[in-house]
Image: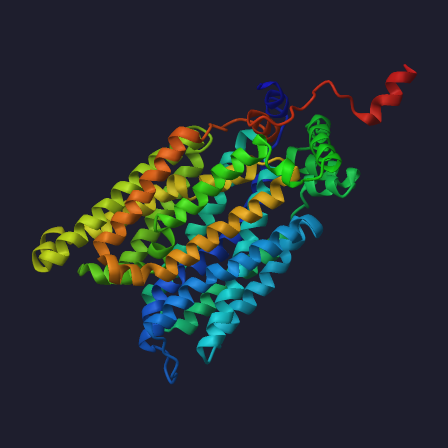
Length: 484
C-alpha cells in the first residue's frame, strides 16, 4: 500500500523549497479570509454607536446582525463561482481575479453611506473569501508532495488566524469603522502581487492537455534533480479515468466518493453549528456580556495571539501526530471550553456580583481554550482533508458543495445567535454548542480514517476507489520498447 508513496517521497533528491514558497504566496489569501471574519468583532460596537466623526450612519442590532451574517451568504455565491473558475480558467487565474474584487468589497464598506451599501460590500467580501478558500486548498493539495502536504495544508488556516489577529489588534487602536475597513483591505495587495509569480498547478495543466507545461511545473515544485515521470503518469491515469468516466449521480454515489464526501460534509457543517461563527463574529459582545474587567478589544486581541500560536503548533504536529488525533483532541477541548463558558453565564445570571468577582477570569480562559483547541485541529485539519480525500473527477463538485454547506450553516448560526441568546440565554446557547462539539468528537472517533503519509491515490483506494497501476508504462516510451 505504501510502495507508491516511497517512490514519490523517498528520493533524497526531492526539493521542497518551491513548494514552500508557492504555498506562502497563495496562503496569503488566508489573510483576506481572516480580516473578513474578524472585522465585525471590533467594528460591530462602532457601527452600532456611530463612531465615525461627522457621519450619521448607525446600525440597529437587527441591522448589525444581518451585516455580520450576510458575508456567509455572499460566500455561497463565491463557492459556486470559485469551483467553476478553477476548472475552466485555472487555479492561478482565479486567485489573481479575486484580489481586485476583494478590494472593491472593502471600498463599498469603507465609503458606504447607507445600510444597503454596507451589506453589498460585505457580500462581495464574502464571495471573494469563499472563492479563495476553494482554490487555495485545492492548489496546495496538488503541488504538495505527500510528506509535507499536512504542514502545507494547515498553513492556510494559520494565515486566516494571522489575518484575524491583525484586525483584532487594529481594533484596539482604531476607533473608526471606516478606517478599520481600509486596513482590512490591505492584505489583498501582497496576495495579488505574490500570486503573479507562482506556477500554475500541474494537475490543471495536465487536465487541459498541456503535458510539456505540466511536466515543467511539477519539475519546478519537486526540484531539477527529481524524476517526475512516475508522478506525471499517476496523475495522467487519474485524469484519464475521470475523462473516460465523467461524473454522474451514479458515480458520485459510489462508496469511494460518497463516504469521504459525507464525512467531510458532516465535519464542516458541524464545526459551524458548534458556534465558531457566532463566537468569532461577536467576540467583543461576548466579553462585554461577561462583565469582565479587561477591555473587550484587548481580550479579543489576546485570543487572537493564542489562535496564532495554536495554529502554528498544528502545522508542526499534523504530519507527525496525524489528522485524526489532532481532530479528536481539538473537539474534546472545544466541547469542554464551551461547557465552562455555559457554566459561567449560568452562575452569572443567578449571582452576577459574586460570579464576576470570583470567576471573572473564566470567560477569557474559556475562549482562549476554545480558540486554541479549534486552531490546533478543527480549524486547519479539515482543509487538509478536503484537499486530499477526493478523486479528481469529483473534487470540484464535492469541495464546492461542502464549502457552500459550511458557509450556509455559518450564515444561519451567525444570524440566529442573538435571537438564540434571547430565547435560551447565554448559558443555554453555549451548552447547545458544547453538545454539538461532543457529537463531532463521536463522528471523528468512529468514522474518520488516518490519512497521514498517504498519497492522494492511496486515499481514494482506501475508500474503495481504483488503484494506480504501477506497471502501466509511459505511453511515450512504448515505441522505444517495441523497437528494442
